[in-house]
Amino acid sequence: MEEKFIEFLKGINALTKFKNNMGKYRSTEDPHFANIDEFLDSTENPDEYVISGFVWGKTPEGVDFWDKLDDKWQDVVQGKQSKETKELKFSLEYDDDLDNAIGKINKCLHKVGFYIDYDDCDDEEKVDGIVEYVIKPLT
Image 1 (cartoon, rainbow, N blue to C red):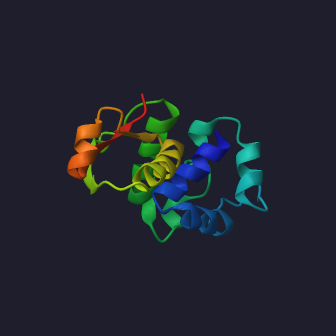
Image 2: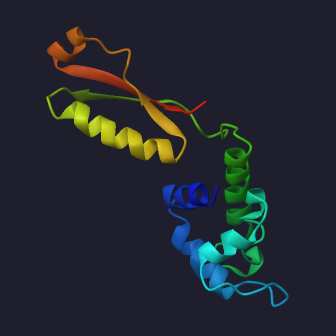
């Protein structure tokens, strides 16, 4: 779950913020950690990663930012789809390199809980030159 948390933070461009705040804004009563890996290793419950990282109110982003981020993380931990998660449709012009590129993108999406549904597209669509894809949450 530790790796998933890191990927989650990367996916929403919050990893650097989390690391910086963890180093600067931990409560004086809480232990200090050399890095995020040490912190995650010492935190027993993944659902506490965000809430126990540092004092939210002291950070430049503020309480609302970290509260919303924690809500999203709780959805991930509980295996729920975020309210903001919707399918995204897109079309691309087909060429021979497209399948390879889509496969690589799909691997990245899996790390943050999504996948590209392209099993439904048939060879006729590819011949016409346009293929429709849908990004869906993993279930």
